[in-house]
Length: 258
Ligand SMILES: [Zn+2]
Image (cartoon, rainbow, N blue to C red):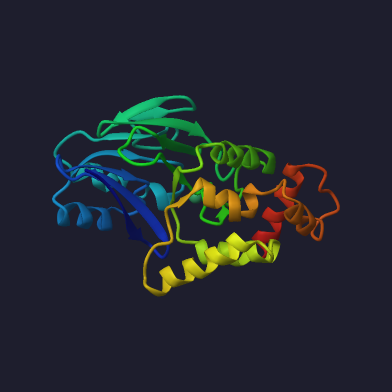
């Protein structure tokens, strides 16, 4: 039985742990901090088999070295080849097998130039994607290293995954993202319903993630740059809304100052 659990780190990071409850082998995604990961592995009597890294930011990589140092066996560390301690460098189109699951690597530059995602449709449940800081629940990452066009193309690539795909992002930013989404599309009913549900979860101390591609397509303005209401909202911020990339750039810079 495969289980996936978020391990909370820093103020709002989620380090995802995917593990096989029978073999007790675990896969960790983006361990920014080793201590909470080691505590979780010990609590559940898990052996760390592999680490997946989505991009180079310290809150996603800072724990790798200590996890490797404290292990008695070799651990496969997958990720962009430019990052220290990656021993299995990856790029677009590569496939890897971990815990008997196949993951396909998608290059999704924009937030950083090295950013990749891991898509799996060979598990026991719906497909899933680990997408780091590119697609968030109700929002998207800041464009630090790439261009707006690059980020928009990366989001398009994720949006094209099957609608049922579970979206495992790396931060609990959902309520702030949805507040912005409502400023863009105040009359989006699925969005307003999602806000009620997300607020309820946070009041109970529960994560609002994973979401699904279907839910993001219905409520996330950054995946809705072709929708009339989103184009109209973008036009209050910029004079050029001639295509969906221009709309994306307008609402991304609006969100940067929201
Ligand atoms: Zn980042």
